[in-house]
Length: 137
Image (cartoon, rainbow, N blue to C red; front, side):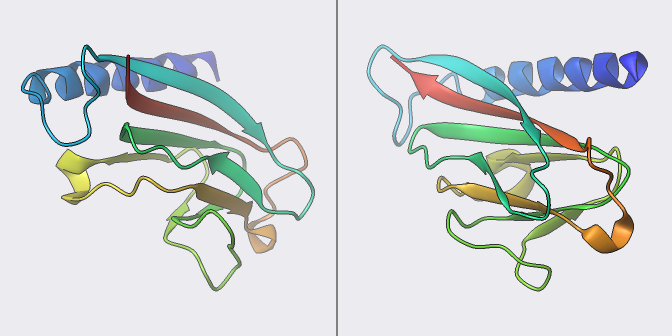
């Protein structure tokens, strides 16, 4: 598990460096005198209830979500709803989603919801490591 964490942190560092390189020129919603910041949060499974992974952020540059469970994690680009039929991404056990402008061509700045697929037996101790990268002043 420690090797997986180190691997994810190395990928995160590489992605942050790539974002900094790609965002050297001011654009769009960049605040004046801005710098890049990140927030790393573990999100725990809460029974069969959906969990909020990130809130709306107009200064978002990217989101990285690692499914650290034995089951699948469904992710909705929606701050209000998610279900086994309404989701945007589905991460298998141990998979990581890198959601940024470079990979998807657009960047959703609203909230993300998460829900573990109970049919894949995610386990009660399931969690996701969520990293949000954003402009800050």
